[in-house]
Length: 232
Ligand SMILES: Nc1ncnc2c1ncn2[C@@H]1O[C@H](COP(=O)(O)OP(=O)(O)O)[C@@H](O)[C@H]1O
Ligand SMILES: [Mg+2]
Image (cartoon, rainbow, N blue to C red; front, side, top):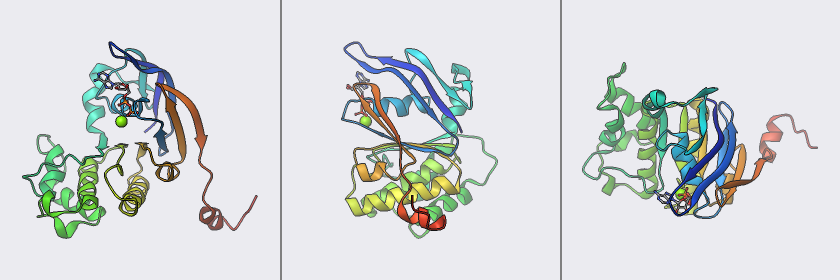
C-alpha cells in the first residue's frame, strides 16, 4: 500500500500538532518517525490509519484521497500496535487476537487464522494463556498477532518497544520487520530509540509538527555482504 500525507495540518485549540506535513511512503516501505515527545508522531499514525482527520490537507491511499466513505474499509485494512499492548485482561491470548474480527463478516475460519497469527509470532503454545500469565515481550507479540489477524496492508506501530527492555525490544523489532516482509505490508513506526529507527528503510524526524529530516538508512554491512561483498 502506498500512503501519502499532503500538506497535512492538524490543529487543537491551543496548538498546532502538525503543520503542513508532506510525507510519501512507498509500497512495502518501512518508515521510522522520530522526534521529541509532542512533536506529532502519534498524530501522523492516527491520520494514516484513518482514526483521526486532518484540518487541512489530505491523506492518500494508493493515490486515492481517503474520503469519509473509505474510512471504514481503510481502518479494517490497517493494523495498529501500541506501546502499552492494550490487551483485554479477561481474554486468552487467542481471544485477544480474534477480538478485531469477531464483529466482522469474514471469509476465513477465525480460530484457524488466530492460531496461524499466534504461530507467526512464536506463541502458538500460549493460545490459552491470559495476559497476566505472559511476559511483556509475549504480550506485545500477542498484540502484534492481533494487529495482523485481518491481514492488513498497512502496519502502524506507536513506540512498540517503549515498555520493554532493550533485548526484548530488539526481538520485537526484528519480528515486526520479518512480518512486514512476509505479509508484504507498508509500515510506519514511531520510536524514541535510534537503534529501532535504524531498522527501518527511512527515518523521518519531526519537530513541533514539522518534518525536519528525512533520511534513507544505509544498508547494514551484512546486507551488503549478501549482495556479493561490494564495498563502496
Ligand atoms: N486530543 C488532543 N487534544 C489536544 N492536544 C493534543 C491532542 N492529541 C495530541 N495533542 C497535542 O499534539 C501534539 C502532538 O502530539 P503527538 O502526536 O501525540 O506527539 P508525539 O507522539 O510525537 O509525542 C502534542 O503537543 C500533544 O499534546
Ligand atoms: Mg506519541
